[in-house]
Image 1 (cartoon, rainbow, N blue to C red):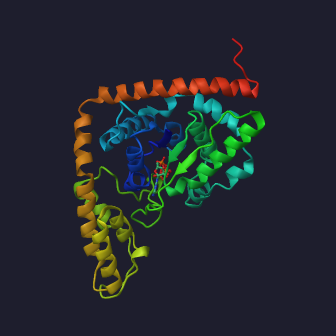
Image 2 (cartoon, rainbow, N blue to C red):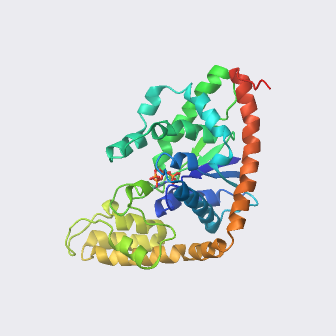
Image 3 (cartoon, helix red, strand yellow):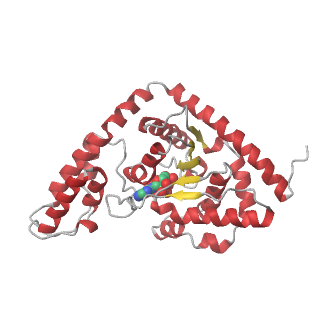
Length: 323
Ligand code: AQP
């Protein structure tokens, strides 16, 4: 099965990206044909600083490799190395109703949070559809927050196929029910653009500061508390064993437990869980040429597929190359 997914180099990946998506990318590698890309064109909607975008792009490649992506097996590449996606995005724009984009919750959320939108942000779901469809992807692992975008991709593919013939595979989302949208330290969706994230590779005092500043309510120590509404508990339940999670749940409900205590344990868990990945990343950083080789090779593999599919798309739409 061909697997496709990506992450924006709009900052450093966070714990929400990991439990929502990146962990699944790694587990789905075996027995499948994975294509994982660094969504640099998407990040350009927000990061408009060339050295920074370059740095984040290479950084995300390092992160992927440190987390266990096997470049012998998976194609890891930067989005700009397959420019055919932007061509396809235009073609798909022409079969995408405006109303579909206007209903995009993630766009509306970002605007409501005060981001000044550009056309790229509004048209994001069309480029995302192109990213997926251009490789005839079967399965797309994403976090809960991307559910609606995946439905849009399926709609757009269906509209294209209906109009021009069966070119595209209608992809299936792969979304774990067990991992809801991961909250950030202020309780909103953990997001690079909200500055509320705990980075996968954070450590030491920076990590401690973030975990200890997670926002909680002001219930006194003795009061019973609702774990389902508590960010430290929700984060802890993603890492701790089932037994330990059940113990904390009982302690929340019983009262007599302060949030400082659960945050301290959460800090230990995050620190321990990601320590081996941090170590591997430090090793990989010593060989920058290796990372660029991986991206180059992955880009060539991905582009070969995209070029073939685009020949079919051009034929189907009446836009064959004339030279
Ligand atoms: N808080 C989250 N909980 C669960 N899954 C999440 N993902 C992101 N945040 C959460 C999943 O991570 C994958 C890669 O995300 P992305 O970086 O491409 O885009 P995003 O969803 O927009 O993530 P951010 O941090 O919110 O980025 P910015 O702020 O730059 O827009 C996706 O599969 C996503 O579902």
